[in-house]
Amino acid sequence: GRWLFWWYVARVCFAFSNGVAMSDGLPPAATSTETTRNSVKGERRRFLGTALAHGGARVLSKVASAPIERIKICAQVGVQPVAGAPFSGALGMPATLCGVVRTEGLRALWRGCPTHVAGVCIGAVTRLGALRTLQMWAMPGGGQHYQGAGAFVRRCSFLYAAGASALLLAYPLDVAFTLLAADVASPRRQFRGVWHLAKSVARERGVLSFYRGLPLCLATAVPFVAIATGVHDGLAPFLLDRPGQAPEPSEHDVHPGDFSSMSRSGAVVNSWAPAHLFPWNLLLGASAGFIAQSITYPLDTLRRRWLFASCHPLAAAPTSLRGMACQLYMEGGLRAYYAGYGANATKLAPELLVLCMAYKQINVSSYFV
Image (cartoon, rainbow, N blue to C red; front, side):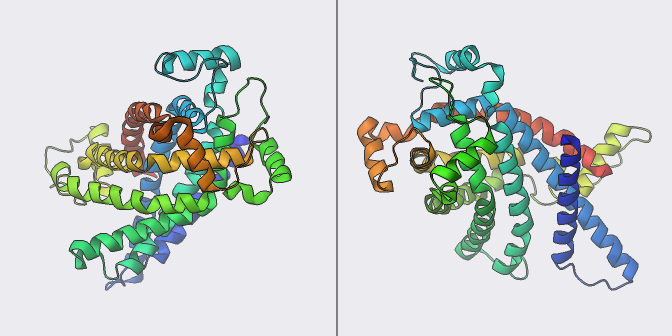
């Protein structure tokens, strides 16, 4: 049943990519209908190869960092992962992870991870599908016709719109993941799984509780996109060699009978992200996102604490978001808004390691898709 489900998801994503590639408006062919058909097929294959590389690598990176992500969420919402031992410098993250294994078992480190991965996949497919269409609306004629502040504002606008459209679909899964990750075994768990959580929260708090904190999340995305785009645009000329262009072909790049060199050459030609940019393209994107996340981290902590207090059965729902902000400040001052930031910075290492390794392998393999 699970293999059939993932096969169906892959087919839906492939059909979705076909529709996006066809709806992007390729220029009319001047030769024949067959040339146009081949161009469309090439666009579809490149789109699917890019989606497989980015999506597959990101899913694997999220699975690798899931234990640290759970510790971070527990710190943000004010829940002790191990009874009687709060997450602090004295306890340390390794001891906290060991304590979770002792009290809840090894699988508990990945509690809520399938829900998180499902949300990441839905958000990525939605964002990737809407991105190019929104880009054509925001930058008619292509980005090369816009320069300076006008180009920056237009880029931020379509990036924000694509992210907001993905957030509308994936946000309930993020709420469910937060509640599952913060649902510790001491004194006892409140939810047996994601379906039990969905029924319990909908019955006790209402269906709209799954969108608790969405306005704050959409507001946080504005400075996040602006900062991340600005950092990316500022560092790209120094880290990326001729971004968006493939390197000049060389007779020494491909050797007859050398399967690995032929695979790498095919990946360069047939990928939207040329292989000569690897791994700097991934490192640049991760660095820009991490800097933007660090600046907007207090708002994310406030959002998670707000939705946890509003949806968890044992939590007392605050009267307003402002009241929650004041309560959080009274608990620990400004430092309380950065609860779990150390875990958030630590999980960047395994995410980047798995992301780069998986991206390289999948990107080469996607040439044969």
